[in-house]
Image (cartoon, rainbow, N blue to C red; front, side, top):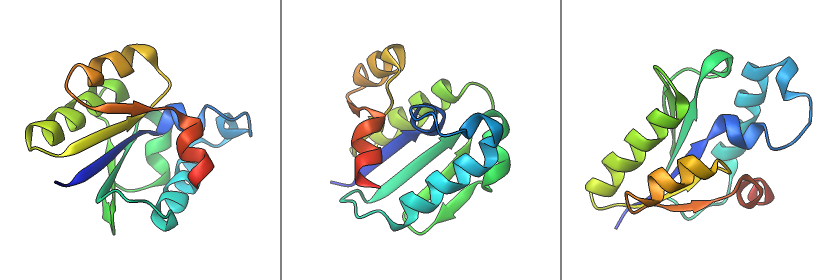
Length: 122
């Protein structure tokens, strides 16, 4: 069974007050760089970007990290990506602290973890 980690980039970046709001594209790029070298057991990491953060990384696949630019709300894109992966029979984990988003993806059968879990591993 393939394992997929879906990352709510806005929520993860926003969980640390390190000045990310001054350079959203740069913060997204740094998160992407950390995910590229992270020691993880996931077959694929899906990094979902929205708004200004999309300027930091082009959409597409780099190794085991797939960057997705949300066309609308990031949460809706995260739910869509989780749904597709769950329906394909993959084990899906979504990283977010957003309680409403957590409920939505858990209802699909995905697991959820908070940003601190991910940041501790980067």
